[in-house]
Length: 360
Image 1 (cartoon, helix red, strand yellow):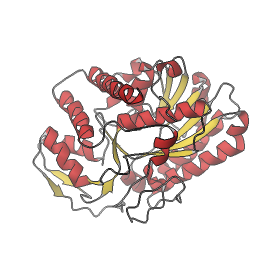
Image 2 (cartoon, one colour):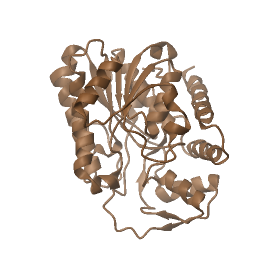
Image 3 (cartoon, helix red, strand yellow):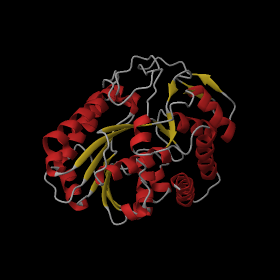
Image 4 (spheres, one colour):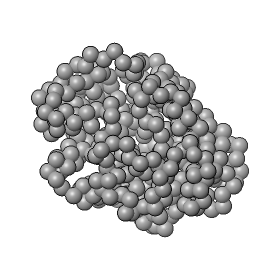
């Protein structure tokens, strides 16, 4: 099967509730869905970095933006009522591993109970067609062998972030089977690899750390230079989510969970290798290993996205050097004072051209 997740005819006029719309992925998703003709209502906290893509790209001008917390049940129910969604894409989360060690209770409350509160607010809603809950590649019980995880592998999680996302998977499955499926709502989870791209300014993430070090004229410190991750560009990942959401909405035969990541034949890329590639594109003078006595983070992580490729026809367009080139172009434009809404939309348009080429 080959589904076109970027089909304007499908998205035009669709009422979409997007949680986490003020974040890095959420801002890209908001601009893109609006460009495709969807009526997007976003629900999220205010951006927690300065700068941030939500402000730089003036995302608030293209969506109905509701500021709220997943832990606020009344506000969340009101947002659901206002959005009256046909499609829900749930991205809001506490997304940082190291922060989850500092605030495990908050992480579990947001990622597990926040998901439960949202799904509960969706029970019994007329007109709701599909719900896609975004989790992470870290939901699997990681034995650090480096073998690529498949969707039917055991869920788990050593750190509170990974554990909270694995628990959110179980909560989602329970609500789907107990309530939502019987009212005709298709529900699934999307497990994306490590997402990189322009507009990420989060703490403790590799590409923002590189950009900050360059801006400050300071040496880049890497905590886990030998750690390998399934890196992918944000536009590839979002295209996968949109395609999955379309499949669910249209009743296609798709699994209840799908991985989205690099092709299985793509070589594993370490933190150090990606850092050196981005520095070569942006400028920079190497890196130093950090004296890191912080909490445990997994060294090896890989996911198998064969199912998404087979059942959706999804393909990543920005693998390897092309991914580095696109994210570096975005940060160079920022450093040069460009209009970052225009630059962000230009990358979306360029991606759509690549996508149409593969759909032909």
